[in-house]
Amino acid sequence: MTVTTTPDLVPYEDALATYDPVMGLEVHVELGTKTKMFCGCSTELGQDANTQTCPTCLGLPGALPVVNAIGVESAIKIGLALHCEIAEWCRFARKNYFYPDMPKNFQTSQYDEPIAFNGYLDVQLEDGEVFRVEIERAHMEEDTGKSTHVGGATGRIHGASHSLLDYNRAGIPLIEIVTKPIVGAGERAPEVAKAYVAELRELIKALGVSEARMEQGQMRCDVNLSLRPKGQEKFGTRSETKNVNSLRSVERAARFEIQRHAAVLGAGGKIVQETRHFHEDDGSTTPGRVKEEAEDYRYFPEPDLVPVAPSREWVEALRAELPELPLAQRNRLREEWGVSAHDMQSILNAGAIGPIVATINAGADAVSARKWWMGELARNANEQGVDLGSLPITPEHVARVSALVAAGELNDKLARQVIDGVLKGEGTPDEVVEKRGLKVVSDEGALTAAVEEAIAGNPAIADKIRGGKVAAAGALVGAVMKATRGQADAARVKELILEQLGVEG
Figure (spheres, rainbow, N blue to C red):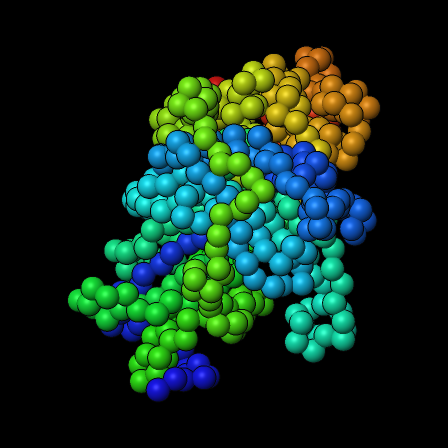
């Protein structure tokens, strides 16, 4: 029996009481090379359609490919960072299928001889538990072009009146990273999927081989999922949710498919092995096409490319150049900064680790660096809907603001105004201070005069303070701060108030 429509979703807890989820995650990463994988065309984004093409990436007769050496180097770096074995000899293959945005009618990829294989990536979950995801392979291939379907309501081919093809993306270097079946995650399977993709993204960025911006399609994930009854060894039939492009969506897609599979199986139906489309609006998936098996692609060795045989000396030289891996770095920084695992996870989620480290390297202390990036700057980024790294402020700017506060030239309120000025393009922190006249009032005579005026204007409060209610001094401090436009040192103002009223602090 094949169920063609999905029954009502089974509650998540009920699905996990009956079945064990098995996942496989396939992540495609666009490499940040200047040219394409097999030709010299530019990979720059945002150019006019079909202006970055040549006979090779258009698959014209007689055009011959040449392997991008930086693409191979990047693949080896990724493999090493994933604790993979690096092949001593491997080659490319032709993966044959017809698709409108594949101009050659085959994709140059790797099949049975990937450049990297048998690795793993440890990922840390929200509560600090570390889960090991085993890597089957990481192989090199090229991206397809881009189809734009016009005239329909959904942006998909169904219902469209015509389609436009842009081959600028065809041939951009890709690394596909494929996990082994992920078992044993149980109810945390969607969380593991999200954490894995997040950790992989951090690793890719740390290696410098790609910006891995999921919202721009530079990194995307296919979520393979199946269910098997509790206690059964044999895997169930899988579905493959294609091109999921955010961490949250990876988690939602896995969760939805667990509930959908359980509903179909519980109704006596069979799961169809197919691709699925993920819908951001409601977190659901819908059918795409019946999934081909490997033999359907008629793989055969690419006759126009020589095998890739990286020397062991080259591989070891690249291994020696690897940066500190993200999880190891976070564990080290957490100890150095004295923060909890939860706080470090929040810093990671905000994309603030890099900016904070750079701010500390520019001279700020760890506490103030975290304070500004996780406070004022994170708020600005959230309001604008952008990443922290996209804000028009540098770690050096933040370190200078921190230094001005430490020197007593700014208080926190004034520092926030300085940051606002920098974000609005008014110049460096020192230039904003000068233009806006934001330095702390440090002239004792001016402060004393402001304090005397506040006491004279609030005799009842002054009497309370004289009577021993020191906490009431806050009202007078507020009056002085208002009179000085927030440019006084609040702590020094309180000291002067108590001195004037003959009260010990």
